[in-house]
Length: 317
Image (cartoon, one colour):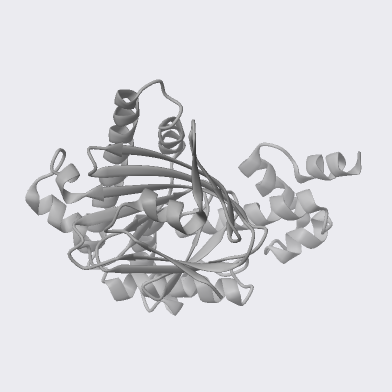
C-alpha cells in the first residue's frame, strides 16, 4: 500500500501540494490525484506559524505518515473536525480521534511518529497548526518553550465549543490580523489546558507508563465489547491503580470523570443505533448495560433532553 509521509519540521503546504497534486485557486488549492480529492487552505504568520485547513475525500486507500524529528524546533497540533473517528498510531500507541471525543486535539512534540490508514470513501476535515520555536517566543519563556518542544509524550485533549468556534473562524474573517487574533486566543486556551494536563499528572506522580496503562485498559475493554458494562473499579484494576488515583489521573487526561466518559460512550452508541434503526429500545438498553429499559430511557432523556422514542418515531415517518 502506498505511503505518504509528511515531515513536520519542513513547510507543510508545499508537501501537501506535492503529494496530492494541488492546483491554486482563489480560495486556496484544489487537491486531486489517485489518492485524494479535496481542498487546502493555508495561513502563514512570518513563516514561523502555519495553519492548514485540509478537507478531503479518499479515492484510494493509503498510509498517511507524519514525523516530527528530534531537534526540529517545531510542534504540531492536529485538530480533527470530523464527526467520524480516525484511528492513529502515535509512537506505537493507538489513539482514536474525533471532534466528539477526548482526542479531538492531538499535540505532537519533537520525536513523534504518527501513522494511520485512510480508506477509500472516507471523508474528513482537519485543522493542522505548525508552530516554530521562534513563534512561541512571542508568548513563552525559553524554559516553557523547551518544555513544549521536548515533552516526553504526545497529548490528546477535548475540543471545547469555544475552541471549535475560534478554529473554524480562522479562515472566514476579513483579514489576516483578525485571523492572528483568533489563533492567539485559541492557542491561549490550548496551552492552558496542556499545562494543566502536564502539571496535574506530575503532581499526582502519574508516569508515562501509568498514562499508557489507562489508555490500554480502555482500549482492551472496548475491543472486548465490555466498555458499556464495565465498572470504574474494574478499569482501575486493569490499569494497576487504586480507584482514587485512577479517577484523578483519568480526569486530568480526559477532562471528565470516568463515569462521565463511560456515559458519553454509552449515549453516543445509543444515539447512533437509534438513528440507524438497528435495535429496539429494549434490546439497546440491555446492550449498553441497563437491565431496565425504563432506566435507560430516563438516562437518555437526561443526557440529550429528549426521549429515545422521539428518534424511533421520526424513523417511522
